[in-house]
Length: 124
Image (cartoon, rainbow, N blue to C red):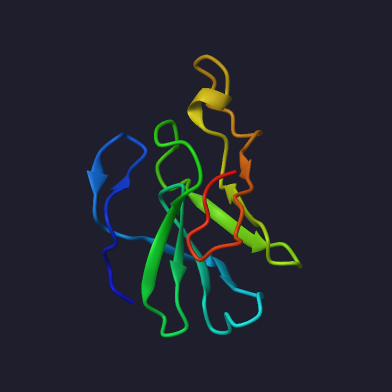
């Protein structure tokens, strides 16, 4: 797979073009005619990347907050609904803004559910 696909925003707000794919968040598309294609989560960012049947990256979905993530606390797991219409993405831990004022607790996290009826789903 190529190692760049546009820009990603890190937890401190800096932007770079490095991808950090997380194999724990890898799914194959279960929709008819999509065999071999799928999605993979980003280890550090709140992104889900789309790849085609040739394993080439073809899209990126920003599925969470740009700022407020702790370092190395990106998209930990992703799944697809049985009918193929939705993706589910779970951040590894609570964002700083979801943890309360000055609280570094990690007991709450975000689950995002973008639609996946196209090859480049949008956050719903």
